[in-house]
Structures are given as C-alpha cells and as structure tokens.
Image (cartoon, rainbow, N blue to C red; front, side):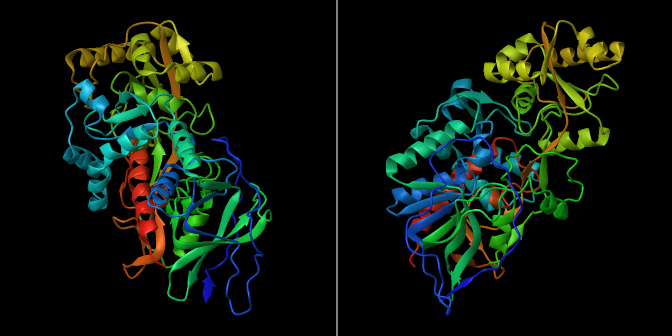
Length: 504
C-alpha cells in the first residue's frame, strides 16, 4: 500500500545553458495508472533514484553505482548542472597540493574555526568538522575524475588561501567530469523530468516519486505523468531557492524582486517544499546570502564575481560618493553585502595592471571587457571622472591603501593583505561596479552525518537522503566562499554510499 504526499501549484521556471546531454525522452515502461486501492503501477524501477544533476547529485550517483546499486538520475531542467555548471569552480580544502606548493600553513581546526566564525556559530558543528576533515579527500576525488585544479585563491572570511580553482575557473569543469564518469559507468541521466511529489509506503519509507517526463520549462502542464520506484532510496539534490521570490520573501522579507539573483532560473524551492510534506525537519530557512561581488551591469552570476573576489587583498573597494573605502575587502560575504546595503548605492572595485595580471584569468578579463561590465582606464583621474568620485579624497585614499599594502597591515578595516600584493599604481586600471544579488540559501532539510533526512521526531526518514544546497545547518548564518563545492561533494558522496546500503 502506498500514499502520495500532497499536491501544490508549480512555480514557472525558465531554462539555462549548461552541460548538454540527451534528455527529455519519455521513460520506457508500463502504464502510469494507479489502482483504486492505492497500489502504484510503477513506470520504471531502480535501486537509487537521484533528483538533481549538480555537484551533490552527480557525486551521489557515482558513489551509489560504485557500490553496486542500479542508479537513475533525473533533473527538471533541459540540461545538466544547474547552479553548479555556472559556479566559479572554487573548492575550499585543507592540505591540498596547491597549498603545499604555495607554502600555506593550514589545518582542519582552522577551517572549522573560520566556518563557525562566519556562520555566527549557528552551524551544526559535527557537519562542519566532517566537511573540513574530508575536504582534501573531496578535492582528490574530483582530481581522480580528471578535474584539474590549477590555481590557489583566497576568498573573504578565510584565514589563509585554501580555495582550489579549476583550470577554466568554472564549476562546469567538475560537472563535465562527473557526467563523463556516469556515462562510463552506464548510469542514465534523464533531463526534463520534474518531481511532482514523493511517494511513501505504509511504513513511512520513501519508495519513489511521481514526476512529469518530457517537462518543458514554463509549461507546467507539459510532459507525461510517470511513477519512478526506488527499491533502496531516493537522494534529493535539487539545490536552493534563491530564484523563488515568493518563498525567499516569506523567510527574508527584504529580499523582494527588486534584488536579482546569481542563480539559474530553476533554483526554486518546490522540491524542498515537497520534502517538508514528508514531515521532514528544516533549519536556517531565513538565512539567505547575498553575493557582494556582483554587478548591476550584467544578469545572473556573470564575470564580475570572478573579477572582484580574485582582487580582494590585492585591490580596493570604493564608495564613489566619498572616494573612500567603506569595508574590509576580505571580510565574509555578509559583512560586505550588509555594508553595501547600508550605503544603499553602487560601489566599485579597482585593480591595477599588476594585480589583474596576477589574479584574473584571461577568460574573465576579456569577457568582462567585451561585455562592458569591466572597464579599463589609463589614469586614476579618469576613474574619478567616470564614476563622479571627488578626486582629491580618492587619490588620497589610494595613497593610504598603497601604504597599507607596503607595510602589510590595513590600519582602517583590517583587510588581509595577500601575499604578493603590490600598490595600486600601474596603468591600466580596471574597474567594475558592484551591487549585491541573492546568491545562496543556507537553510534547508536537516540531515545527519549519513546524509539521511531527519523527521519531526528527530529520526531518519527511511529511504530518504539529501545533499547540497537543499540541506541546511552546515553553513549557519553565512557560507564562506568556495565551501559550497566541498559541501556538495563530501555529503553527496556520503548520500550515494549510504543509499546503496539501504534494505527495502
């Protein structure tokens, strides 16, 4: 006997570019009818059903298959990857090859301390510790798939450089490697398959889902009803809800549609809401992160985050109205975004020729210049004119900043001056405008260290796992930059390993 858990209206979504694979075909199998007594006539069966094709979902699928389970992966979008495919390819880890080559001294305890400090100690400490302890293993696992990490970078809020960046500075590098591995393993990925609701048996075990196969973005009536059975477990890795304005404003009323998002259009919360109908417990839903390195001059994520974040500790952020710095450039995302919102005006980030040559990959610089989101100037005075900055205060502030860089100590905001940083003095100078966008939802489902979803009685829901941004607790109030991939890979792998062990 089975029960189908609740129905709801869908939120319209729009497709994005990602890692293209064949998808959207009707699932082979029998009729999708149910009998009058509630017994379901399944369309297709598998051992482990994974929902979502980002870092976490694909990691879970690889591990479940490696453990001997039959695996099916589905995603509502027309292409794989979701937010992961447009991610900046930055992965925080302790003790990596790049750290050792750079002579960086780091430790698991230091990474844990940094995450707890940023998270205002709202973090679930056991999950933070596991993430940090398994961070090196996660990087090496990606490397084993063929991912190349070629540069060590620094993200605001970390004590030391521990961000390993992929060759093309994009999460698509990892997604492509994961998809290739699943193809090699013979695991099928079905795109255009949207979750409608979860299905439980009378014992409360999640046994599968109802979905729409052949779903077309923006057409909620599209596709055919199918019933997908998971003989062992379902793994939910559907991501966050940054692009669900109604849902995010319920939890954080300030985040109206006046603020755009870095996320792909499918980053809506319907899968999370369906999971909550299983009596799943949620946490930190009102902690929603703004990216302080985004630009109002481009849509979505764009080029500016990779430009601005690479310059922190090498360049400076300026309030054009005063010509002065206004924040610690290497502070965590909340510190910087809150300062920008308090000013309530667009600010700028500046890097000189030397800093940009050291820190910015050609793809980012050339793309930003071509699109016009990054501007090039021959003199500091030209910058002042272009952004209506009072010249004398601005030049004095640049001089003061340069003295801090020379002395290795920021006396105004305690910015962490990075190794190899030099004065901002060599033309040409590069500038981008900054205004925050909604970036990451720290809240989601409560999971244990086995990635099992927890119910309202503090017990694991049988046959139900989750990983990635659809879960909460790990990051507390603020997620440190470059910890997302690590989170997804560490707990996605665990979800797949544990799901494969389930006994129906």
